[in-house]
Length: 101
Image (cartoon, rainbow, N blue to C red; front, side, top):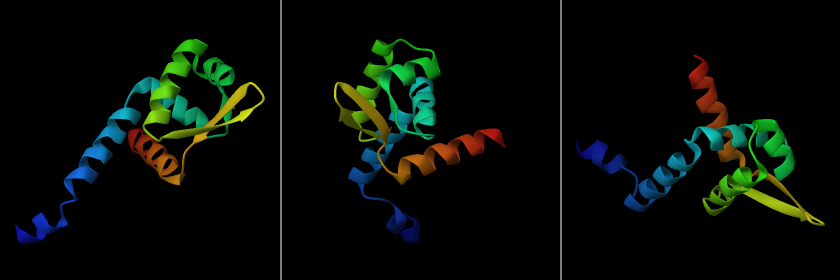
């Protein structure tokens, strides 16, 4: 028991990881993240790819930005979104691979 207890992550890390997993567990957000896993896209392109309104996509991206899952860059008036880092990419790839098995 002591070994298992010693291996437990810090409570704050558990809370942060849990919030992250809840954020990406939503089917709509997972579809958006899967699209962003291929390349950087703007809101209008993401809306067309996943079949949602631009308003709905913007709302979901706002949540993903706040959760530090996606980042964006501005090019004039257009914002291009991308996955924040390789951890997000690996998580999405692993989750979808697991679902296919």
